[in-house]
Length: 412
Ligand SMILES: Cc1cc2nc3c(=O)[nH]c(=O)nc-3n(C[C@H](O)[C@H](O)[C@H](O)COP(=O)(O)OP(=O)(O)OC[C@H]3O[C@@H](n4cnc5c(N)ncnc54)[C@H](O)[C@@H]3O)c2cc1C
Image 1: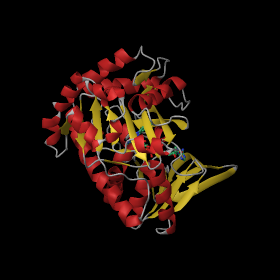
Image 2 (image 1 turned 120 degrees about the horizontal axis):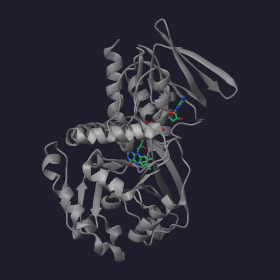
Image 3 (image 1 turned 90 degrees about the horizontal axis):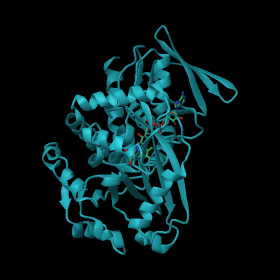
Image 4 (image 1 turned 120 degrees about the vertical axis):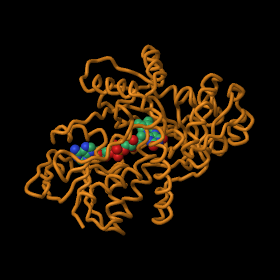
């Protein structure tokens, strides 16, 4: 049994803490925020999606990125101001694309996503966690024949890996999700691809409800409101120092796992580790389905509008719509010209859902250039990283937590 500190109480940190506690370690979770899951794990797209596990390193996405640079409401926005980290990350993305590892990395991600899905379902059952889990699959739909055909062509290699890739006609899309009725734009949908084992749920509810279980049932300690400012190794102990408001915080641990999302890069730098994790910004809106008509007309199957890269999930009496990727550094300002396309999307496909009351949000995906998560040990022995999940942190964290804890234990 080791005394382990987990830095970060987002989905990566919470799943890591759970895995450690189940294996009998003593765990302290430290976060600079006053509550768990207040950063990127707050209001994401909600999808637990093996079907969206494709990495983005394709020549097509590079060409799209260049084309979209000049379109203010495009799915990808690039802010050209000079920033070394951004250009380093973009070079890394280009190199990963040239290495042609897209298929290999996608298949590896699908395996992790399937494993994580099962772990989440097991946690929900065993610990009685409520997080608006809906096991109704994920439906991609298309209003472009060209994109639809391109994605149908992926069926042969994706299915090698046991991935479900059920191709649906326009009528089958409507049968699966009747909320598409009452909608003039529905006729423009040319078809869909359905992954029935995928699911959706509220990441923030999952983290906050699991925090209670970790504290009450497994005796985890949560040191919230505490920002870690330095990590030092002294003999075989790791000393964390930081601030809890005006108080100085200092504590010793046997091992540390850094799950600090976009804050991990700074910590890695202070330890002399090279890391390339960039904050890729995204936006969401959460619509309160206040009236009966809105509740009836909002979809329950989780959706991906593939051509415009928008995802949507029903979370009880709320409807979450998320999308866009913006390279703009550590900046969570909410820009109306990124929120408006999300609202317009709801009005286009679900016109009877009232958008009168909604909450806009922006978050930063901790993303590596090849989209593969990191679960390795630092140069400083005893310190591990668990981050870099990018657009799939909710989908993958339960499985990658297992990987990082396995590594920690194999070094004991
Ligand atoms: C718009 C959008 C939609 C998305 N949709 C999906 C989706 O549908 N499905 C999916 O799988 N993924 C999705 N994602 C990605 C997913 O939300 C993220 O990958 C995931 O939330 C990252 O979790 P994390 O724990 O690594 O980071 P975070 O949730 O950001 O947690 C890191 C924590 O570390 C703390 N911290 C940082 N530095 C320090 C420090 N020095 N000291 C103490 N604490 C520190 C922070 O306060 C924070 O709480 C989406 C992301 C966005 C932005």
